[in-house]
Image (cartoon, rainbow, N blue to C red; front, side):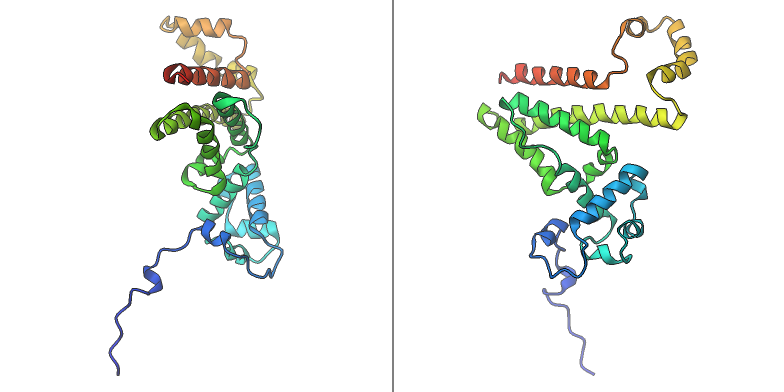
Length: 247
């Protein structure tokens, strides 16, 4: 019996696997079905939007598409790549070519549209953090290009971008958390939410420890206007960047 051969450097198990995006960039094989990456992503996004990200499984997707359970595996290796495809699909709808007057206007438009995207697809707040896709990278590309003529080094440019997107993500996470709380308790809006929390809030205010916050409760008129709150905060962030960097 011949001795077994030692594995060579060409053993497929030692080669790094091509990413989803590298595979999709290759010439498409002759179609055997009407299934496409676009159709897969669209169906999966619809499931996530209506039932949550945890409801997205390869079997649930196959049922929604009306195909065999293994059909989507021709394009994605499993749920992780499916989520990447979904994130890329949603980011691909951002109007990155919208006209803008300078870096500040560009960053403001990006921030407003990112917020709208996250609110329309709340699962993206979690999913996008673990994804790296072409349409995701188009967002910093647009921001970096707008900042390119202001003499910033690469690290500062990234810091500006992350400051703005960090504000977006934090604001959106708070909005979504409030929406989830209201949905879970069946509260229809701000008035019902405040009424439900009134006993707790009254106790805290009566301690006398929070006079500044109590003033806010009595005087604020935009408690239920998250868009105004977001855009006002965004303008403060952008003004701070402009003042600090002199751009």
